[in-house]
Length: 403
Image 1 (cartoon, rainbow, N blue to C red):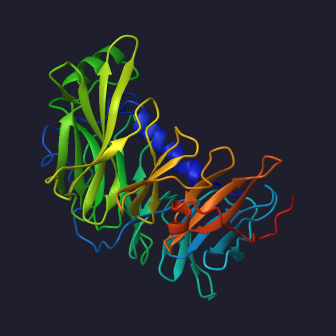
Image 2: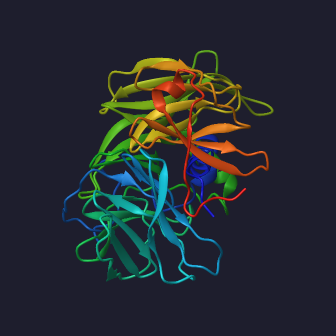
Image 3: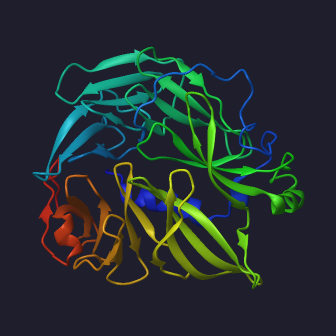
């Protein structure tokens, strides 16, 4: 019962990139007009704490050369954490929890240790096989990111209420609400000590999208979409880029609309979609990949992207954007941000094989379809794979897979 990282990432990307923000944003707390004023009330945490290199966390995650996922034979058996050595292709069982009724909880990976919050308990599992430690928590915590010092949760009931970041301290177990801007639509952790936010900025509170739908869409016409660097320790924002909610109007009545894809090196990468809104819907005229410096200056055109209804999928190498995958062709095409080149792999076909993860050791983790419809997994050299090689090494799973 292994969950697919590729499927989860693809679903998340489609939901955020293809769904209009209006369907996600709702009548939350009042939205302020400037980034400087857009913080929560003074009761939120204002004291500073150390912030390290922030990475995302989930049911499937990785460190350079290693990948981790949950395995559970059935709902009546305990969950295990499985480690894949991406150099040897061998899986092994790292740890098995004692309860078969344990709720889901993400894996928090840091050098030498895996942590997992489950209910009101934080498990700390040494990767060298030492003794597992537990720490009581004040309440349930569902983290989305972590560093060496703590974990972070994007907390709230749904998009109809103000959502805030909370922090779990790994030393004390204390959970603290952080100063969070209003109207945050999404966030990205990119290996830095700050988080990138995507939020809406308006001069007045937005009406409730559920109960005042027409008023909401009238008000959103003048909203601004803004990307910011967010310091979780202080709540301070540094604006990267802003544009009208529906995009930048062009002379012919079309719009250009940017959407953040990820960070690589010292560059931020955006998909710039040229679209035309009308009846019966939205027509995508073309797409481009653009990049800018971390402060939103020095915009550069990287390459053209596939047009049509489906944009490219992104594949990250740890916290770094690495590949953009065009799934509209067969075989698929892959743009490598590092060498700024489109590649046509020899074994990349949606119906039989696709890249699921980049473990960070020069390998690509592949999911391959069997004749019976099940998936098997393997590893290939990344450079050889992009050059068209069909060589790959099957993963030796734990427990051993059957036909």
